Image (cartoon, rainbow, N blue to C red; front, top):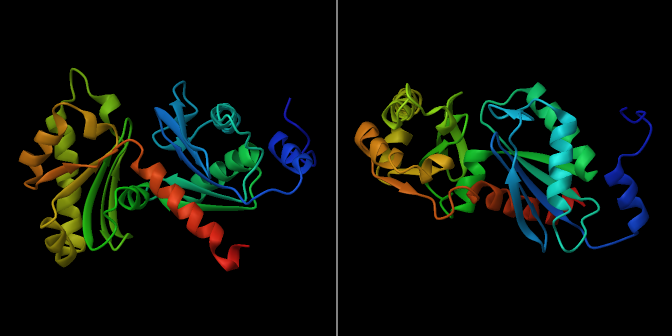
Length: 256
């Protein structure tokens, strides 16, 4: 049975009993196939999120997602009983409903003082050290694909499709997935043509599961007509960037 609404969550009870401690920043990347947590002084823990708690980048089961994150946190040698600041990655074009569900997950898992959201593509640019200037970035995940134009780390325009590497099979090839990104780039050029023109000089930064696919990077190069470069750590770049954002936000005087 769910706990009564006026009963503190396990994370909040643990935090209250632990007494004062150094401020803790946490970052979360909750994907359709993999979930990851970064915490101050502890680094990254990750594991599979299969089974349906996250579907196409959206929380489908709040309790299961909270349990998943709590299980990851228990893997830290140094206990993490709560968080002062949590920054969570979100797909571009997320709705208020999407964010409300994620807030419930984060509050249950971490009992944080503050919660902030960051677009996954923006977090990945930060984590890849590519946030300066104009940037075209494609996040090809297991179940969603996002392509965005960033200006010094700020999302200028973005496109999203509910399709990813997990959908590749007999009827969907890497070439067809590359076509999705190519259409996104064409749409972005129609929306922010000058910015896309400038970003083309840097090529396309590829993150997510797609960066590790044996055929997709080459298919993207041919189809999109841009030099495609993989992020150094394509599957953790967003989590690392969110961790940097969480640390920065925690230090900001207005958030103390």
